[in-house]
Image (cartoon, rainbow, N blue to C red):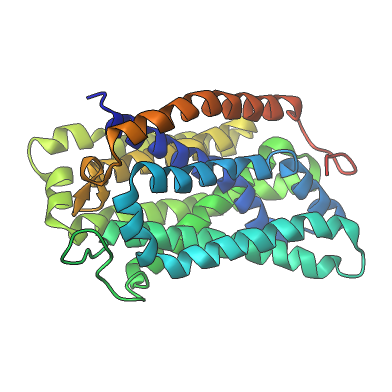
Amino acid sequence: MFDLPTIWAVLLAVAVLAYVILDGFDLGVGILFRTARGEDDRATMMNTIAPVWDGNETWLILGGGGLMAAFPRAYAIIMPALYMPLILMLLALVFRGVAFEYRWRTERWKGLWDRGFFLGSLVAAVMQGIMLGAMIQGVEVDATGRGYGGGWFDWLTPFTIMSGLGLAAGYALLGATWLIWKTEGDLHARCYGYARRLALVLLAFIALVSLWTPFTHEAIMDRWFGWPHIVLTAPVPLLVLAAAWWLFHGLARAKDPVPFAASLCLFVLSYVGLGISFFPYAVPRTITYAEAAAPNSSLAFLLVGASVLLPIILAYTAYAYWVFRGKVRPGEGYH
């Protein structure tokens, strides 16, 4: 139960979840950037994420690098299957980062960089959702069992497009609830309205993906609806309903931190649902994480480094959020 492949599978799963919930809200702020009314709104929105946005992307590097080092067989299959959306996501993140820095240093081209920040955030979010959808629907493996056996555009299907739009809506909800927590005034009030509408959209996408996913593979259908598995899986959708109630209750009562916390719960529960569908596969329905793992000597060596670096990453992340806690007002911020 505590062998090295399992430990690394858990570490990578946590790293991916940390990336989704941390970089998710600042991508969501970028998606909502086009709704800003004037420079004060735009500056305030950016200043809410300025101290933490680049640190949030640390988890993406850990997830991708960890997959290559700890599960090289899975990496060799998944990466070719997702080359196009992966490249588009990385280019969008790069352009978004450049736009974030350059918009403060020019007046003439500020509008261009503002549009770049919005488009970079939106494209990155949609591509991440498309890659998730491609993983859910399955990746074709070649006859050797060590390479990708599908086509160049297998990742592009109605299901993956729906997943991409759903994740973008989810990130936008995280962004809206983050701004509720971190801002005041007119922007704060408008974000309550955005959050209510985005919550309904996200719940609709969660329902669609939840109903569609079991039909992608018989084993997933059995895991969610077969006996006795349903006894263990039934609490997940019930907890999703509870989190949705908590979200709308917080929005109705104008309790600023609650909508963000409830939105995070929706993401965590959706992630747990994906874990239930995927486990124990690194390449869904084909190769388990134990089969894809590197030799134990390599995993042990990597674990030594991770045991040193992860506490440092967690410490500076927590410190950054603590130092820059509280509301961000127009004219204030770090950039």
